[in-house]
Image (cartoon, rainbow, N blue to C red; front, side):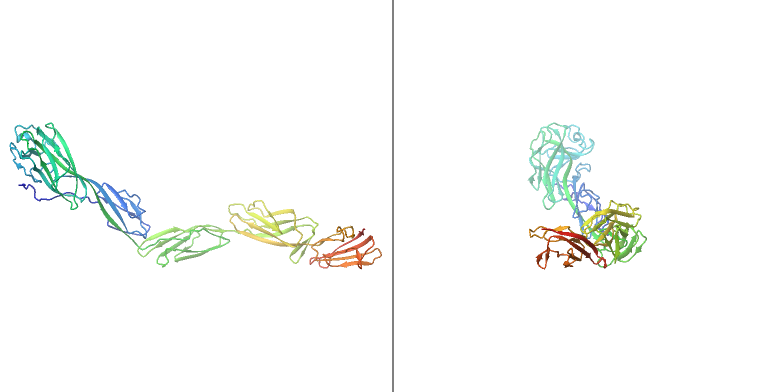
Length: 533
């Protein structure tokens, strides 16, 4: 029969339980949430990528609008003493088929619980317990009837864990005893012999897997049937296992007050108007406070403003929701640049006339230009001046803010009407421009001979001209008779009179070149021309 020495047949071991301090956390989006868990030696947090440390007991995370929950997994090494495993409570806490005798274990198959085997058997030595040397332990005179339950407990563990059961043994009289641990009647490992020498404590270890029910019936059996020897002590029965448990923390974001603005810096020359809109608040549910460095404050949901003074501006916006969440953001950089004003373009030529907004120039005279512009405080860099005319352009050296004039003299111009345009760029990127129209009086170049002999060289009296809209030619012989006349710039005398080749000799040419700028005063040239064979 099995003697009942405990109040209940099942001894429940301590479970493995990691616990989060708070099961639910409520905060505003973007807030830092501090987590805390206890009850384990190792921690693993999951289900949120913003967790600062996924293996710490007290990490933090940034609450987002997609946050829902986090899970903490705890791992611990649990070491539990069997119920009255050190026998300090006496003869209780376990079941056995051995016979208890508190004063004598002279007979085989008996045991006592006490601090000294000699006190219950005169042939045994005096040895203290394993724990303190003065406490109780189980004193056993091994059974001579073979297999018998020495110690039994029914334990509760986390299902499926690997449990190491340990106990300490001391041999009273050799030869040693033989023990076998069983789980639900099945052997756990091989047999265990008590120490080969008397009076020496030795530990035994066996490992088993807990069934899915979590209940484990453990029997420590004696196997030897020897009458001599087979006497020993048992002490400090313990269990060790690795356990894992989980807890969930639910995350509840409050109504959002977050801000998203276009981050592109804005710039304007001489003035700047802008509009800021929080794209995270399409419903217009938030309260706003806008602040600019020029002193402007506004509480509109959409912030519209204009700046007219040159300089760089900063600002920020504050938002709050109905649930008390708030956020802030800096406004993008705002800068107003200054346009450096161009005042005039001067034509540097001794021979020029002003006609209807155009300077008319003598193409035979050297010509330059000068550009005049304002001086100003500057914007932290050098300014640039470009001038274009016809298909050409020139550039000034980098301009300091104090410089107010720059010139090029002389310049080479194409001789058709054109515009001279100046462009002044500030270091900010602002630009001003000014243009001036110019034109040229006609020019005429007359050869002093020609040879109309049909050799395809110099067969016509070709008069070269520029800017001539009308080229009036009149040719006279030495008797003053008119032999050729035209007003076309592209028509010339081929040396014939009424279809017949004129006689070689000296002829007299009068050329009048005009365009819209000569105003009835054409350029006139008179010269003698030789017609040669």
